[in-house]
Image (cartoon, rainbow, N blue to C red; front, side, top):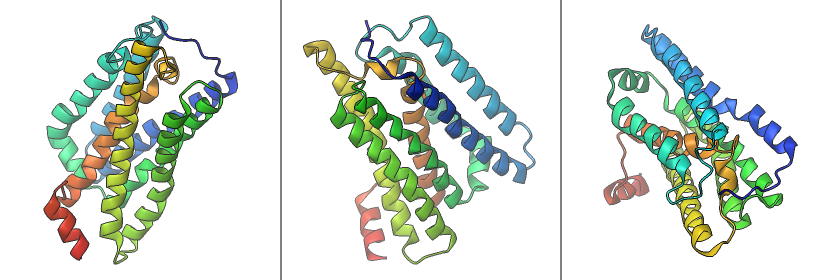
Length: 246
């Protein structure tokens, strides 16, 4: 069973106030892009899906579907993995997604990452001994750096700075590595917690914080992939060399 860490109520309330931000920002992003192509379905479909998905997470948590400590964690099996499959197998190949991507500015995709300021809650939870400090501080600071720097990266793109292409590329690499580290480290800590009894990331399987693993890793990686698709740049040695020489 999950360990019941004492998280101050104000942190949970603050999180509930902050967590709508990514859903609102992404929905507005879809709205602006869909409006350019007279698509009347993409925006309401996105909003309805987010509402239903959040409701599903809340109901699953209420009925204790995530309460069993396991490897992989139940929240991944029931939420994260299915959501990732939806994004990378279905949404990625739809005409609507491709149209929205084609009608979106790169700087607008970058600016979406401002919602990763929510990473501050990793640090707040660690301070109150609800998450392992090394994990939480690295993940939280990484998210916050990605979020804050997204403003400057987007500005460089918009102002067509000579260094914008390199900056955006390496910023995307950093942001993607940060979220991958967080996801992998969380699973490693879960396995260690089961095997040795050390503190794991049980708090991230409890509502409302379970929204983080259920939503953040797939959508953040999906946004980073959107940039690479938009610019037709992919992870490769030749790409590194070309960008280095420019």
